[in-house]
Image 1 (cartoon, rainbow, N blue to C red):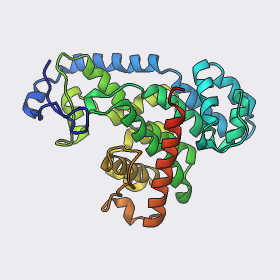
Image 2 (cartoon, rainbow, N blue to C red):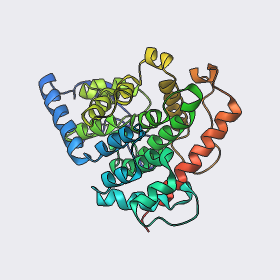
Image 3 (tube, rainbow, N blue to C red):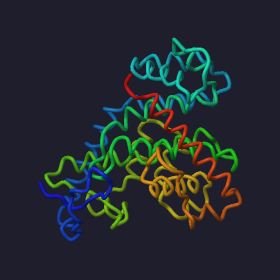
Length: 310
């Protein structure tokens, strides 16, 4: 086994510094890379096909004629998901009061406006339960990073007149392409680890010929997420798209904020990016944003603790 890079966070300190010249020699042929990429996408699709449930719920919630019973029946097709939704609905994150004992009670308790967030937190925990060794991210880090971005994007969407549900899904799922890249690299005999010595997208292009933003967009499109979700995930690194789309601007700020603080949900108040373009937008108020970050972090901790095994 040969290690070509390292992450400096705890648990990965034993790895050696990167050698990018060596990395370039590991890139597979275009034909092989294309086939491996297709297989990796298929594997993720088959392993996490229930992510399509999240897409369907988003569609149902946009229909004013949808009732809780209809969403409940959809969730009941997955027993584990259904049980976890009920359990999380009874956590502090969704208030105190009566305890839900069935899926319809759980959905009624949290209300229509929070159903997508409730189901998303549960499904994302199932999908993100595996370490992303190639990125030096534990499963807990990956979930915290993704869920923080989802909740923060949802919170800020209303102020810019954007769909809160779409913003939430884009934030929650923006890094799901990393699961595909990680799966691709697991198949190689050489283990390669990314760190900040090189841009993530450049590293992905060099090694596997595909970036996680593009892979994520393709994956979400195959799960039938709306174009406002899968296209934004594909465009999340485009400076032009970020400048033109408030949702992508906020997502990029959330992503940088989470990375700056190493995804640590516990501990002291998070530092905020000082020179991000979002700080120049008319929606930016330092005190309000700092409060939103801390509320989002608290909510993430509550959901994380609710999902711990009893």
